[in-house]
Length: 361
Image (cartoon, rainbow, N blue to C red):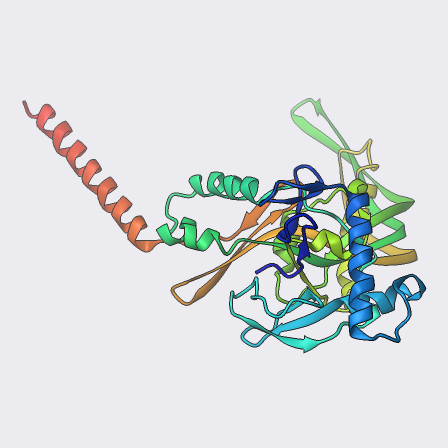
């Protein structure tokens, strides 16, 4: 079940966001709606919801953004794995994209959990499944159930919570540079080595450095499907979640900041180090990176996600919902691997017998 549902005004069926055409469509009556039309429809729905919830409440136009977000969203918690899913206020139940068990209503979300931005999906479900099949073809020993229709039904379009950081990295790199030259002097090979103290200073601007704010999803998995392009980023609106799932962040920014600093530290040093030239070799002896003018935003970024359990172990597959970049650790079918080994061994044995027979003729 989708976490957010909007009804078609023509037939009453569910409207979903179409990543391919960047609009909203109804699969039953083939109606389509532009972003502007959907915005108007969404505003009408919000006003009706406010009137039903509290006849004395102010109209939607007079509400603050945070208050509107609280009114239109609900938080669901998975009792099995603890994942927290954002849902529309009218949604009564859904399932956990991570472990596929039902979730229960946990309450409202406060305005502090309202994202500033959302990056809409650009990869459709059909394209995601096709890319997944191509990814699997390169891996010979996957369990058959990993690519079954039943398993693919569990592939979910999920808006993953990310913290995006802007800053200037004031970077100092100290290195030991060496210049070597060799020549022949009679019977001797002479090598002269000169050492130089090298220092480089730079201020490097960083914009939109991402780090996911979810404890359930492995950081390395999200890093592997980067980068995201922010040129299609939109101001957050619940309408973009239609047909998809979303997760509430459960790692606050102050806990994310050390991870961001480490990423920027490593990248800044490598960037500055590239400017060291004119030496036979060099070794970085020390460095210092200070993040200045730090700003951050909370955004939802699109990911096609699939969780798989095999022989008591968990395996996760992720695909960038904008670019289609894929990552994951696939399960290994020992049955297929042993069968292949047996066939290969038999082929080698047969070939050896054939060669041996030819040699003794």
